[in-house]
Structure formats: C-alpha cells, structure tokens
Image 1 (cartoon, rainbow, N blue to C red):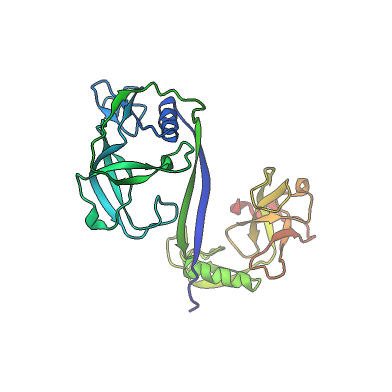
Image 2 (cartoon, rainbow, N blue to C red):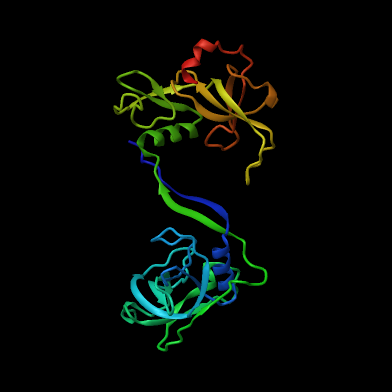
Length: 313
C-alpha cells in the first residue's frame, strides 16, 4: 500500500473587533504604562476588567488604577516557547494578582529556570519598548522584592484612546488525508480521478473518505471516474479573494464526474460567467506540472438532461 500522505498546514486570519469603553480604557492604559481594573458594587477589583460582574451580572464601569507589582498565585513552566509567545527563551506562565486587585492576570514570567519560580513570589511588570494598546504592551513579568502597591480611582480618560484591535488567529497542525484520499491525491497527480464504491449501496464517492457516508461501512474498491462531468449547481463569485490571482466575476460549481455519485467543486472557465448553467457538460483543464485541475471548461456536448443529475443536487 502507498505511504499515507501528510503535510504541515497553517490556518490563519486576522480577527478584528471593536472595544467597549471598559476594554478601550484598559488597553489604552497599557499603552500609557497604566493598569486599570474595574470595581464591583461589593468592592472587588477585577483585573483584567470586564463589562459585567461575573457573580451578579450587573454592568460595571468604575475604573481603578492598580499596582504594577503583584504576587504569583500559581504557575507552570514552559520549556519550549512557540511562535508568537511573549518570550523566545524558556519561561513560566504565571497568574499574578496585582497589588490592589482581587483577581489574577495571566502572563509570562522571565525566570532563569523552574527553581527560580514559586507561588507567592513578588513580581513586577516589564513594559514593551513599543506599545500600541494591546496585552503585549506588557512584555512580561520579572521577579521583584518590593511592595509598590497602588489602588487609586482612575477616570479612564486618555488622549487618542484605542477603539479596536486586530488579533491574529493562527493554527499550525499536521494534516493527513488518510488512505482513501491519499490514493485520490496520487491519482490526481497522474491526471486521473479515482473514487471508492460502497459494497452495500454501490454508490461511488469522489473524493473518497474511506467509508460510505450513507451506509457507514468501509470502502476499498477503487473506481476511476470522469474525466468529464456535469455542472449540477453553481455560484458567481464577485469578491476577489486575497492571494488568489483570478479576476472576478468567476464561477464556482459543483460538478458530478461521470460515474460518480457525489459532486465535487471546481472553477468553471473558458465560457462567460453568465453563460454557465445547470447541466453544462465540462472537462478538466490541467496546467503544466499541476497536481490537480486548474479549472473545468465546456466540452461542447449537449447539456445533460435534468433527470440524469437531479439526485446529485
């Protein structure tokens, strides 16, 4: 059996969000080297500040200036920092109850080794050299043996407050398509389309998943399908995707390859977008060195009768 494929993949997108007045004051304060909490009706000071009391659900907005020093309440050693983490050398993740606060803030502690960290140790903020109004304006915490507690009321008013942030979301992982899709991908590299037939209902699925989605039984019998197929449904794309060198508008369609019982998707080219239609007969177009069809184009055949593909809509 051919070796099952695997490859590193990254899913990444920028998450843009607006800020409430409380969040805006907190992040703007970090930019100005000030840490703000919010005081609840019963006198607790929450850091980081939240908009609603987690106990009573009351809206809260009274800001309090807390200290830049605090006490470690718990910690865990990070022996191998990852991309995007606060420090590029081993460090401790710590929960720090800042002086004047009743809740703890999670951040990194710059420590030489695990023996240098303990619950109850005193620490202080180390600020980033460049600050923009984000939690990363705190570069990390560092050990500190003095008590500089503060806890004064703060109006939360700053010049040029931060009203929104962009938080990059990223997931790095290794993906394996499994035995069935490995065979499908390897066949595509040879300009063939291969599906698998269910031993129970006899339907052919492309791309194969290794099991019939209807019967729930394993599939292993390979069946070559296509290369031509029929457009079952389609949509016209009018918004240009980033890093995709295709001019809009263009058409993306579900295509039922001949001999398959499941439609796959592909781009339609070689025809004006407003002439694409259900039942259009198409064939794959390969680029030099391409491992999968670049797009599908009309074959010139008469359109397929609706009854021949209606079950695949």
